[in-house]
Image (spheres, helix red, strand yellow):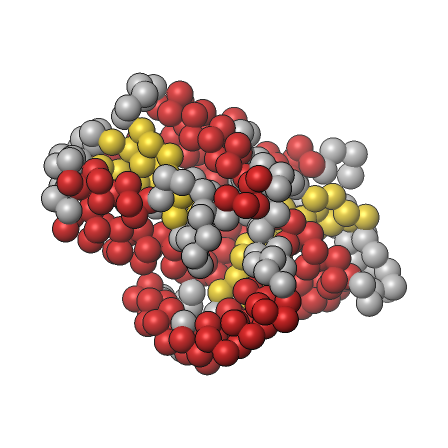
Length: 332
């Protein structure tokens, strides 16, 4: 009986994660795993356990579930649905360009599909080499390093480890900057105008993390500068901001919501917001930016708000992912 030739390698795309359903119980389960990760919240464990279980997991699941219901799709969470599209699109592109099937899998750092589940599926393919590609353009200990930790934990009981390579970041990759610029131009063409301001909103982290050596803000600044240059935007036409802060300590500034309120008060006539750090649209883009921050801006007096969608499964994004795979699998 002929044996099936194993693929030269497999690819694991990794994103943050999502609840299994837009319900308080599902959100509570997801938040319990996500917020307990010391990479995400590095507060003393006994104190944080008390705050998390006595207050946060009692108070936040209801409101968060309500927000998830606003963006939930027939395919489930937008992050998961788009991730599946990215997975299938990259697998198809790799097959077309390399002339053989390279299995691509989607995993989440928190929630499902877990790395253990995906690892079992990868083992079935017979692949002895694995490229791990976290879908975070800018490195942060809170995201990319958390993927590394989770991967190591998932492999701990495994007696047969694959050869592995790990993509740390791609915040200034030319294909990434081109893809972002193309998405901006497409949005402006659709709206038939270039706005007065372009706001580049990245997910925030506590300032303390940056002081301790996390290079994330420098990566965001580089991405923003390169995107502005690619678009030919002069200083004053674009701004870099940080969103999604949590807790009381200072996070990276300027804050997106406060900036949009100020721009609204200044009677800005037109404004676009792009979130370059998000590889797929999710709660933080579709609800926080498209709905909540739009309302802040318009209530303050601003006009002409438009959100530029994440790269999602756009052809330019799939091309970037292909180039990253090609670059990091040389010799395999």
